[in-house]
Image 1: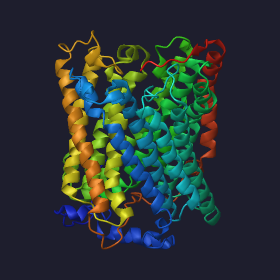
Image 2 (image 1 turned 180 degrees about the vertical axis):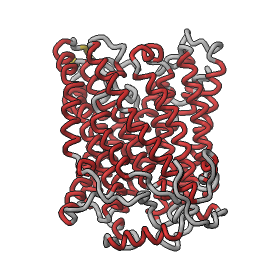
Image 3 (image 1 turned 180 degrees about the horizontal axis):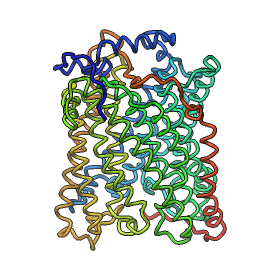
Image 4 (image 1 turned 120 degrees about the vertical axis):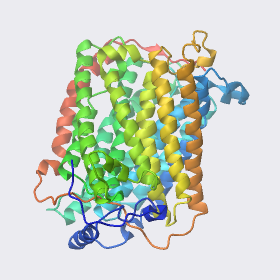
Length: 595
C-alpha cells in the first residue's frame, strides 16, 4: 500500500500548526502538492476564499447549535443508565416524573439517535454541497426552513416527552402510545431532512446547467448520494408516522396493526445507521486525507462505495425482527444475504481510506509497513485524532454487526445489552466522535474564530474513545451473560449483578468517562463561540485531491438514476411481500401506556 514519498519537509511540532482543524495543508504536505491544488482550482475557475459560504453560514451554524442542544439533553441520563448496570440506582433522587428510568431512556435515544444526528447532518451535508460545488444553496429560505422545521419538531416532541406523555423509547413501537405531539414532532424532524435534501438537489441541478460536461465534484456527489439514500429509506418511517401512528394517537379508541408499524419502522430503522455513517464517510474520504497532507487513493472507489449503499442498505432491516412471529423464514433469509452484502462497501472503505491516510503519513516521513501509522497526528490535532479513533471502534462495531445479521447467532444476543453495545460503537463512536472531530475545525471556520483550548479538545476525543471502548466492552460482555437491554436492572429481581459485576463495572465507569468527555466537548464549543479570539485570516477547507489524475471514469459513477432504479427493485423484492402479508394477516390491538 506504499505511496510515493514527497520531498523532505520539516514536520510541525506545535499544535497551532494543525489548527483550526487541519485547514492548512497537513503535516508533510509537499510544496508542489499545495501549488498543484491551487493550479487545479484556478483552471476550474474557482475563486479563492470562502465567499460561496456567506449566504448559508447562518442556517448551517444554527443546525449545529441545535444538534449540540440535542446532544446535551440526550446525554443527561447517560451516566444514570450506565450506573444502573452496576446496580446503582440514582433515579429516586430526581424530582417527580424525571425519576422514571424509561423516560430517561426515551430522552436519551430520541435526543441522540434522532434529533442530534438529523440536525448535525443537515448542517454538515449542506456545507459539503455548498463547498463541493463552490456555490450557495439554491434557496436561502429553504435553508432556513430546513433548520426551523426540525427546531419546531424538537420542541413539539420534547414537551410531551418531558411530561412523561411519550415514554415509548426511541423506536416508539406500537402498541405503546405516545402523545400526538411526539409523533408530530418526529414528522417535522424528518421533514427538515427532506427540505435540506431538496435544496441540495436544486443546487446540483443549477450547477449541472452551467457545467453540463463536468463530473460532479466528489464532496458534493457523496453528499447528494447520502440524501438520496435517506429519502428512499425514510419512506417507511414517514408512512408509519403519518398514516398510522399519528392518527391512532389522536383517537383513544383506535386500534393498530403493531407488527405492520414495527416492520415499517425497521424499513427505516436499519438504513438510518447508514444515514449516520455516510456523512462520516464524506469526511473520511474527501476531507480527512487533506488534513494529514495526503491524497485520496481512488476517487472511483470512493464513488462506488457511496453508490453501493443505495441498493445494499435499504433492502435490509428484518434481522431486527428475527425472533418475531408473523415474518416468513424466506423473508428473513433474503434480508440476511443482503445484510451481509452491505459489508462490502465498508471493506472498500477500510482499504481506500487507510491507503489515503498512509499517503499523508509517508509524505510526513512515516516509514515501515506499520510504523507509518505513528506519523499521523494522534496527539497533536484533535480533529484528526478524533476521526482516527472513531475508525478503530467502528471496526469493532462492524464485526458485532455481522453477528447481529446471522440468523443463528442473532438468537443468542437478541434483545440483550450486546445490541446496545453494538449501537454505541456505531452511532456513539463512528458517528458522534467523527461529528465532534469535524466540529473542531468546521465551527471555528463558520464562526471566524480560533478553536478554544485545542489541547483540551485533544484530551476530550481520547476520553470519548476510552470511555466508549470500556463501556461498549462491558455492554457486550453483559449481553452475552444474559443481561437484557431496555430494562431497569436495579429494580429487576432476576438481575444477576454478582455474575455481571466486572462487566457492569466496565459499563458504569465507561459511562461516567463519556459524560465527562461530552461535557468537555460542549464547553469547548461554547467557549469557542463566546470567548475565543477572532481568526486573523479565513482558513482553507480541507479537500482531498486524487492520488492520480482522473482522466476517464465510467458515467455510471457520476449518475444516481440507474442506482435508484436498482434500489427500488431490490427493495420491492425484499420488503413488499412481507408488508402485504403483515398488513392482511396481523390482528389489530389497542394502545397502552405503561409508564
